[in-house]
Image 1: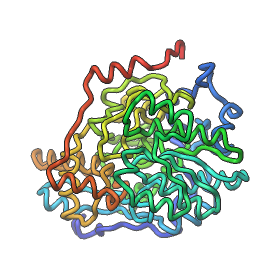
Image 2: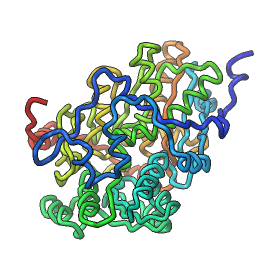
Image 3: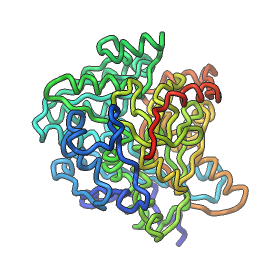
Image 4: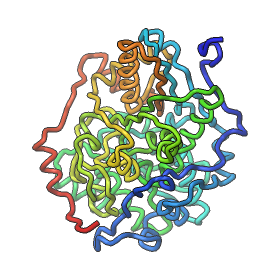
Length: 460
């Protein structure tokens, strides 16, 4: 019997097969991510240094480079059962439309109200905040998926949620904003005039449309100045990638059921939560020398952290109040153009993924906005899902790789992450359909100006 007849369109795990532990890829990394540095002293930060900003249990996860598997609390497991396991889909219709011998699979994370994978970590961070007895949490959001997810998790657990939303997304996506408010969150466009850092950024960048770095600064300021609150982040940090490994663990378990091994694994990359979550279990095998995979990160040409950034210590935020992380960065002062993939508009990249990229374990490519939406439209018309702009970066490169297989006749197996749906991104789709969408790529001069602001860190 052929593989096409054996493998269903959607592969579902049972409820009992939802992962009960997260996988910590750092445990298998020979070169660990560099430590976070205190922005004032430039010394490595430990548990006590991070307590004013983050929840205690999350700090422990952030700093743990050695524990391979971390138990998922039972209350979080129970919450996961509301929308997990998520389906692994064989893209038969896309394969047929492309006329490719490649076999294409995607892990679909959009089957919950937040519309994305972000809920996987939001419920965890809200759970630990509640367990610590905190009143609430603050955060930033770009496209709005993370803010939506955290507002849902906070409402479920009965804690307060304050969201600083990148101004361009706040204006482009009013319905995403209203979902957050429906779940009880307060939503403020960033940079705002409500914080000292917001006022400073607005003064220095007149008319700015904002960035994730700006919004992070404001959220951290409010958390550290408000009793009973802590800051939580939807991407970049080690702890977030840890929580998101439920994606890759489920995907691998579903493929293993049918004896399928991917040749190529593709994910969009902004801060790294989706990509890191998808690839971690496969990367672990690669690091241990058990299997080899070609892993591709796809980022927007307008915000090319991997492909044009520097591997250096940098502030995680534009206001320069957060810890410094060693990562591929465009400079914390870099504010990308107002492209429609709001979740991929961060100046830096996860320290874990940055180290893996630096060590040659994964590749990175860029995609221009119009080409990304062309791929999104192509996918939507045959697979029946309207993808988020962020996810569509992965779709674009998956299609490219499948068409290469068509040219060579190779029957490669491709796995990519479909992080969420695009139903709150209709302004972007309208601009694409009307022919008004533009592509912007920063010049070398713009990047050099931002690189000049990188902090000087010697000997680490």
